[in-house]
Length: 151
Image 1 (cartoon, rainbow, N blue to C red):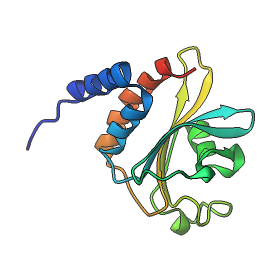
Image 2: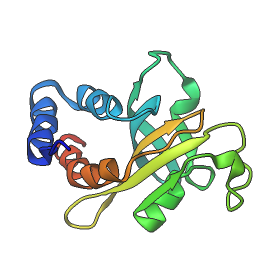
Image 3: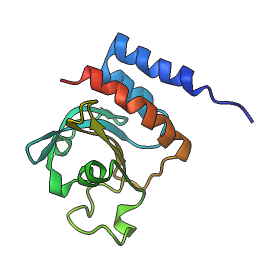
Image 4: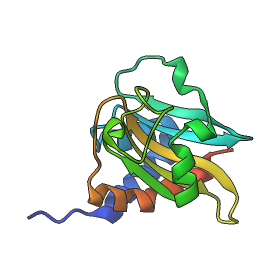
């Protein structure tokens, strides 16, 4: 079995952020998963606003722009620190208003070192998807890198 050099992969994300910015770094992380979308949402009042979105399908989706916190899976990521659902329509713990909007979601809270809440980093899709445990561990290390590039 091949050893995966996580420090080198973390350095690659750090380098892409520094040289090319947030969207290319989101594309890099999206490429590591089956999810269609990878995004950073900022909490503004009671609304999650999409500030950076990578769409593997390269389509403009206005419904990605903003969503009330209480109608977003980000609500759970912010409350718990991390949240995932692989098949929301079959998840008995989830009910409307999620039906038909987002089928799979992995999200992690974005919080500055001083504890200030920024929002969430997410992978999501309209189709059922899952994320490997190894990727979750990697994301725990690299997601905080984005905070230096967010206003």
